[in-house]
Amino acid sequence: MEKRTIAEAAIEVLKESKQPMTAAEITQAILDKGLYSFNTKDPRAMVRGAIERRCEGGNPKTTITPTYFEKQSESKYVLK
Image (tube, rainbow, N blue to C red; front, side, top):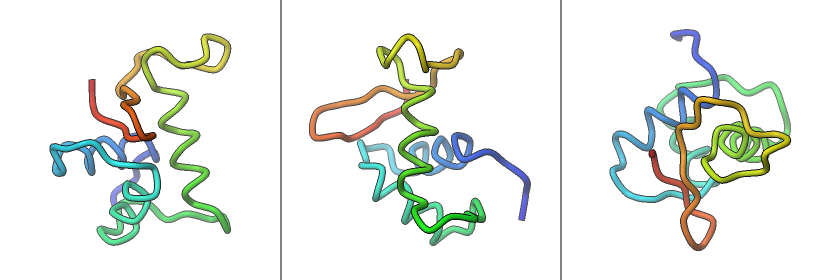
């Protein structure tokens, strides 16, 4: 398995999807494709956190630049 971050795995999933996805959908796609090996009981929370930290317009205290994601309605994410 290629070493990548959760954010990088999410980017790969969203590039292939070409449509907005929820954190749960992104997590399931990461698991299905074997893009990241989670060492937690709640991988969806890890994915949501990684995306939110790189989400444009997010909390200025926790956002990391560069940002890669945008949050759409219904808690769905897309690439910027």
